[in-house]
Length: 152
Image 1 (cartoon, helix red, strand yellow):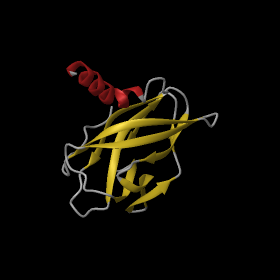
Image 2 (cartoon, one colour; image 1 turned 45 degrees about the vertical axis):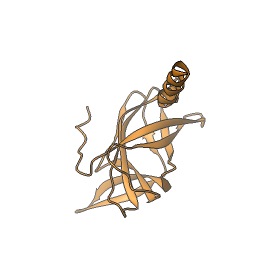
Image 3 (cartoon, one colour; image 1 turned 180 degrees about the vertical axis):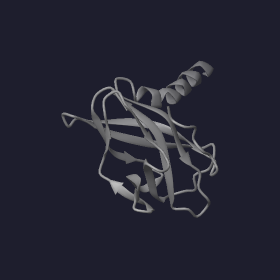
Image 4 (cartoon, one colour; image 1 turned 90 degrees about the vertical axis):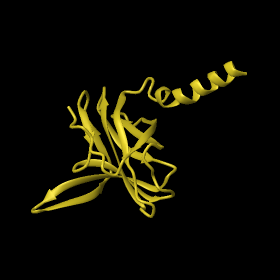
């Protein structure tokens, strides 16, 4: 019974890694900012690198009513955030999804996101031929005050 339980647990824990086997896209340092109890939005951040030209076209999560890709950019003297249809992933280049640039927004949260929890996210990546691939992630929730290290 212990051996069966250990095998089942190993299988469950390896699901996020298996989701990327064979993928042309690697995901590193994913995280989501924790929220206060009544918050309805949160940001998700990570670094993406694709072996071939591709585009991040969608992100899904069961903890949010809707998920959008966003970009923050200066317009004159004002920083503005706007939804984008997709984020290009040039071959061999790391694309940093971070505060102040491209990032993922989770809207209409169904629960508070607490530090230490794991949030399921599914990235939908489309290659140059139009083929779509789902990449399942289990993303850690970091403290409200967390700042990611600078991307290299």
